[in-house]
Image 1 (cartoon, rainbow, N blue to C red):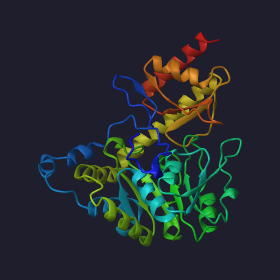
Image 2: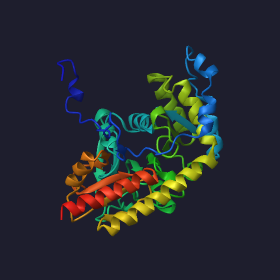
Image 3: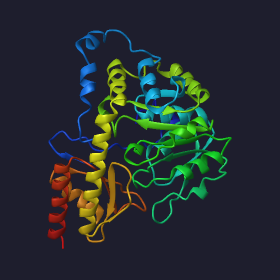
Length: 354
């Protein structure tokens, strides 16, 4: 730490991303898609687009917001795009909760929420989950604070129903409710339609998971236009060109190719369910994950040990050394071949450690 760092940030505990390997591994630790992007993405990244990279990208992101609006049945002025959904969440927490504002979220959830609260001076309440890791919606009814919930939650994979989300939103009319739907494509009914009914709801999404564009960093939020105007005010005060031209073109092409991505999402869900059954047959307890990962624990081998043994075999998964989940592992759903190698390795390790 240098002597120049502001006192405001000296105690900041940053978010820790999953390990990025420099050698060939089976990478099941960062919830990326195992599949390549839609062929239509490659088609739009033409020589003409590349030759025009000497020009700034469109700060209004008209092509991308129009494509997202068309996909979700809203108007472009209800769409805000960011450098990953992290960008959208950061602007929202800074703008609507910052400098002494109040925010609450589940105690076990996406690790960036408390980081953003710290960096923007937000008073954060982290609400414990129930013993089965589910969210008790009664903890959020008439809360009187801004709320952010990942739905499905991470790393548990458990999801709130559409009706439960509406109960939370409708009971907090004077506070912003952020529903972080990074994994909703693998789950079921999004709460996106509720945006048309409630002025206090912001729904965030990412292209990193379901649309195979983690490397391009594109996310978006959908809300009524007044919230989007506020977010754009913050963006244009900080970084007007927050998405590059290649990301804009690629994401617009991806969001329009429902046929390709719907098939890949269905395949991931099928692989997830098959892998979970294989783990349960080995004695693991798994949550009812509705995301593109599995959250699993075993009494037969400590999670930390299994994580290390898999790492020795060049198989990366995610281990969180945190209270209440320190004997659980989060396993991203890879291809069918990758998951079979993974489950075979787990079976071998458990046999060796009887």
